[in-house]
Image 1 (tube, rainbow, N blue to C red):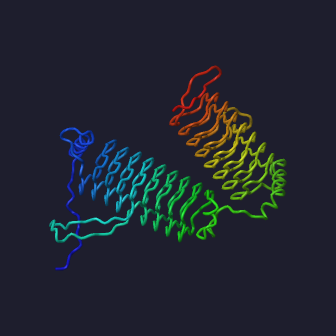
Image 2 (tube, rainbow, N blue to C red):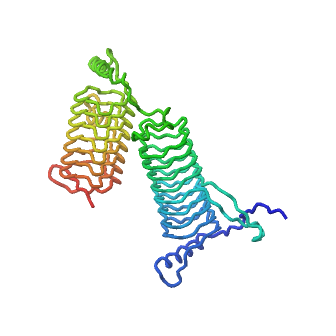
Image 3 (cartoon, rainbow, N blue to C red):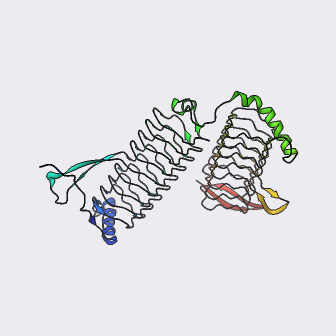
Length: 459
């Protein structure tokens, strides 16, 4: 008799109370207490139930239905979600390290701020019984893991295995994907803005239409990867990645000799544009320009368009860049010492290891009216390891900025918006934070001192 394809139609429906009993027994199991039992919830229907904050380390959810389940901050390290249905589930802040997610469906799931280090998200093979539970009619079905429309902002997927995964239209903004295996993965139209992708294996992967603004893609394997209409402006690459044939037609910033030769004339025309309030000369349009290592000390480029520009190790000391747009620019290791950066736009710019000592990021006032004007925008900027001694950030916007390891000695951050900023390892001796918004900031504490507030990094 010919076998018919099995249908797993016998999921056991659990109530919230029954699930709570299973979680409690698992807690006793983890503590080694009497009556403890490892949670084995295979082929259970847990749709729309609440598993938030549960410690289910090593629990087994193979083949389970978890659609719309609430799983925020769940701890499932070393557990199994093999071939589980997690469509539209919320797993914000979850710990899923080394979890078996092969063949799982995560369509529309929210994995924001979750950790999936070394998780296995490759294709899977699941045994399914037919409706009569006839063992002779067990069949197997190959399934690719589906992360369609997944929200994985700030998720940590370091060393995760995603080969052959179906990942289209997903959001990996600011996610950590270092050393991920993404061979043959379909990631069309996904967002990787600000993601870290060092050492990733993208062999045969499809990234057509992907957005990779500010993505760090270094030491990567790109053999036969397809980037098609991907937007790679502002992506940070090493020479090996930049010269890969798969990126030969990509819109990366590249050196152009004719631009370097024309640069003095462009700067001169921009100066005339400034002095005439736009009536003469021409505004500098240097978007996506490759200006790495250039000596631009004292240059006047206030209001210039420098978004997505590469200015790695450039000398911009004493420069005038008021109201310039440097969004997504690569300013690693550059010098902006004593530069005028009032009202500048450095949204998602990378200023790691830059010298910004004495730079002025104050607000440009509008018509002299107090409290109104254009604040410097450094939201989501990467400033790790930067020198910021005595820099002026009064009223600046630094939401979610990476200030880890920075030297902020005597810097003025009064009235700055520092919500969600990371101060891990920063030197904040003498820093002024009077009136600053520090909600959600990491590794910073305040102590009232004469003349205002000082901040000191916490352990």
